[in-house]
Amino acid sequence: MDKKEILDTLKAARIYLNRLQSLDNELENAVKQITTTFEETERNIRQTFSNLKQAVVGILNKREAYLLDQAEKIKKEGLAPLEECRCIVSNKVDTTSKLITLGSSIVNESAKDVLKFSKNASLLGSLPEVPELKEVPFLSFHHDPASESEIVDILSHFGEVCRIAPVQITELCEKPGGILVEWNSIDDDEKLTDIQEFKLQRAFGDVIKEKHLLVNFHDCYLGQETQFLVKDLKVDQPYSFRVCCKFEGNPEWSPWSLPQVKCTSLKPFCWKPHEDHTLSNENKIAKPVTNSPTILYSDGPQFCVGHSVEFTFLEADSNTAVIGLISQELTNSSNLIIDQPERQPGEPGTSFLINSNGKIFVDRVEKCTKLSDFAKGLKVCFTSILVNDHKVRINVDCNEKVVTYDWLIDPDSRMYFVAQLPSSNWKVMVE
Image (spheres, rainbow, N blue to C red):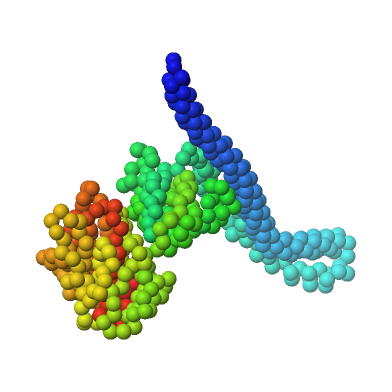
């Protein structure tokens, strides 16, 4: 080998060594995950069963004491009248015995106590009322053997060790001011059709590095979809996400997925400040302060392929307004649609606009499809999907109607979202 071959081999060896070390780090993380989760699971099992034993023994002792107290109470209540009756019978036995003794002495000896005997003899024939056996308590303890078996069966199958949660987060995608979270079942045996509901939670910060942040998890989505756009996030701030599911017929939630951490570097959609408009809600809401104001632009070219932007009309009147997407800011423009440059053959598109009459204009060409008129409360959502290197697909969702057009623009280009509001009677919010 010459010197060059040796140097090339050394370079390849260093690259190979770096890859091996990277694999070793991945293996170390995998081992750490298993040992860490085992230790946590072991603690949870021991603590749970310790609490359960204490609770079950306490409940059984309390129930036993209650039943014994009930039996003691019934015994006392049943014996009280019998003892009273028995005392009466005992007194009468004693009195009657004495009467018999007195009568015998009179017959055998003298008649001096005849008057006394005659008086006591009048008490004969008055017997106390003694209840029959069927009228007094016959105590017994009853329990349902089926309930006992059910309790034993429940305790016999209480808890389980899960190797890994059935649903895992598959992708976290940056969006303007948000993160699109996607998840799916990882087990072929666990069919999505058997899953009744998903629950997505988020926490502020990185829970993998800072375990104490686990207490900050809170619900941000409940439903049957397998993705959710988490909005209103701070830029460059890490957020943690986890998901679980509930299977049909089972009221309990599954274990949580592995936590995933992501942050977005894209600022939220908002309007560019302008003297003709007042902005509020972190510049998401705009309202003209004059009639015939200038065009309202996004705060830079914020929209690109893979994004969705939603316009919500908070106020509206009968004058013609325009919203949509354009490739660049216009100078000295009074009409968004007319003042757009015409697209020449082979050139990329420049505008995708909708006016308040529901008419759609793609690069100044009016389309046949018509959407709903703009009105207070109406929402219009633009979504961009990549088709190929020269084309994107724009979906417009308006009032439960969706239209789709393929737009010839550079997929790498970033667009402005715009609005032309004709008077101060209009107010629009963008998200």
